Amino acid sequence: MNNVVVTGAAGFIGRWVVNELLERECTVTGFDNFSNGQRRNVAAFSDNSDFTLIEGDVRNRPAIDSLITEDIDACLHLAAEIDVQESLDDPKSHFETNIVGTQNVLEACRKSDTRLGLVGTCMVYDMADSEKGIDESHPVKPASPYAGSKLAAENLAESYYHGYDFPVTILRPFNTYGPFQQTGMAGGVVSIFTDRDLRGEQLKIFGDGTQTRDLLYVTDCARFIVDATFSDAAVGEIINAGTGTDVSINELAELVATDGTDIEHVEHHHPQSEVQKLKCDPSKANNLLGWEPEVSLEEGVQHLREWMQERDEFRS
Image (cartoon, rainbow, N blue to C red):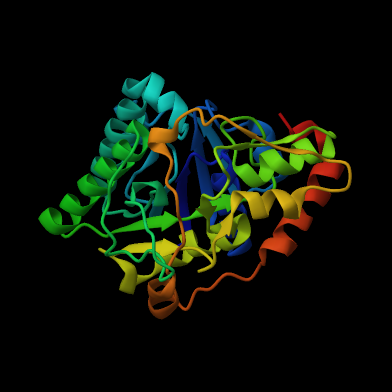
């Protein structure tokens, strides 16, 4: 797999997927409209002759057709609208990017015989109340237009696999965090908490803080996405990635907060879309790919804190 396209390449996870591919000596074409991603995220690759960055939108079918051609070996599709609250306020934008955009990518890949790694989300799953963890057979219940549009995109991809024998793998990483993640409301809770702690501001927990998340460090996530996309055994499969351990938001706040940082509970701004318990069962990824996470939560939070202290310009 030498020639690879990454949509959403300048986004948080996309940036690390590009990094992983370049380390594996792939030639990478990144594609991004910079609505969520930022050029500075991929600035470190600007002098790498194996990386090209193209500005464009997955909703633009001609642009996708010219991007994904017969000389492309694989496409890793990460371009998406990702804000849950924004999807509740403006569901149309999520439909157009996450469904229509994915349809454009699917068609271009099908016509050029390019394998596809479609990056979905754990937010499609129904609430879980057991300690077992969520595996790929767990019921789905999208609780926001964001989750609904991502699940619809997955269903489209599955139809291409069954209808055309098209080589696609559907990837559902759990809550991912790390350097280059936004620290505003569109970011993840670990990055938001760490940024606020460094600024000496309160850590605000929505609701009672008993909701749990399985927190996956971004380099582990990127390695999973690349491994699964390139694996013949993974074609046609839906695969989760997580640590297999969840932590409550209350526990996370206590881990992140340093001396003098207050923790406050505030009213939840979208309680109807809250998933109370997210804990991954990553056994399929381990069995099928030999993949397992390498970075603990404590190590990951420390890596993120050190990166933020060194790179203040990346914090929004």
